[in-house]
Image (cartoon, rainbow, N blue to C red; front, side, top):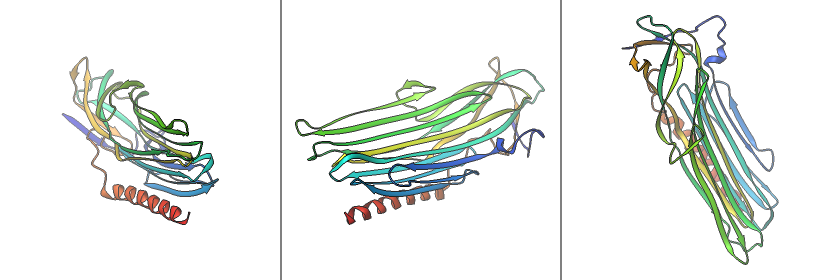
Length: 299
């Protein structure tokens, strides 16, 4: 038996920040760049474009945090036009949810126990790296990172995906490409970090502790000479809390009640994200593509 108790606050000393959310995006590179932030975790989007030293770059980034669901979408496109030096945008996104919890054994049991929970990570990544020449020094490079962290009662677990690719053109060799794609769980390389994952952390019955979910996104697309680079990560339906699987003492299941400062039901999986979130991320990407094409038409 599992019982969920909702409460507005656990103690007078508990800060409202312990039930807070944050969403933040930043695009930097040539020109002023762009950024957006919301202290409630609401969906935020920033989009900008710039041309400098014959390199045109466009970027769009979105982030959202709502209870146990965190999402992000990032797009950067860079086109060089016989450019002597490199140019491009770097986009960073951050989403966070923090809450304060207490778990009590239904039978009044005290002491330490083990909390087993599940989270899930999903992402779609696409990239273009094209360095056809004829400029003597031409390259196109892309990179992306997506990292999800969950910290409960001071113990951290992470899911991390990183990818880089670069193509260099030289008159004597033509285009040559090289890259890597690596996944990590708790900083240990694994075949995949996607899908649902289960972790266990110790806690003490009756003692308050923090739960923190974080999702970080990073995208880079740069080019020089006649290079063209595009990087896109779609992770709006990305990092989800999949609920508490069990509370055990010495391998024995214990019925429990959970109190959360925010009122979020952390026992159950979060519901699927609304179509409005997914639509907003799609519109942001479309806006970036339209802006990119308009800039190209003017060149």
